[in-house]
Image (cartoon, rainbow, N blue to C red):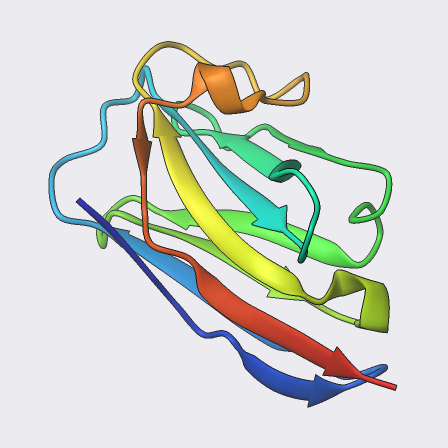
Length: 125
């Protein structure tokens, strides 16, 4: 079970930190990712991280502004979002891929095996 938190309302240029806690142990062979879904749009990949070595991959919109990180001891994955823009407004979802992920390519929705409930991020202009 995955539980995401940390969403909210923030002004453009501000920051938010999302966290996703897994209730079970995450294998070193797993990958975790953050996706987002804006109103009327498909759920899209944002960032992914390899649980084995922390290698990470970002979509172009996230690169340079967002940082994905993991805490093995707490079984959590975080997404630090800086310099937020109104177009970042979406429901953000964390998900687990129960097979090896190198952290060197974007994850697809079909790659993920478990999803958490989303957390709303709203960026005002």
